[in-house]
Length: 155
Image (cartoon, rainbow, N blue to C red):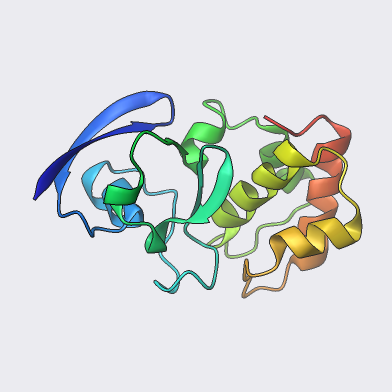
């Protein structure tokens, strides 16, 4: 076990875990930030997506020892009030069905809008590739990303 000081959602948090503990389990089990979901455990589905220095990463494949001084943002940290343009657009476009993948979808979309505030359909499809929605809401996800972009969705 080792002590790690992490900067998560704007706050410094300390954890005492093994160096190879995936960031996903640090967030969920150690810090009770359960919005980030476990999906596949091998970085293929996108349910566990968070931001490291504003870049979307699969937290199940990032050992806590690799985080260092990078800023971690989870779905809980995207907006304190839950009113990020993407979160509002998700509701407006009626995206969620089961909801399980939605935090990862939103975090991937937020990273996209941060680097490309007005993406085309093709750019959205490319950025969102690998985020699996078992309910098949891909058309509504794309619509929500466009809605958020229209409302100034980067943050």
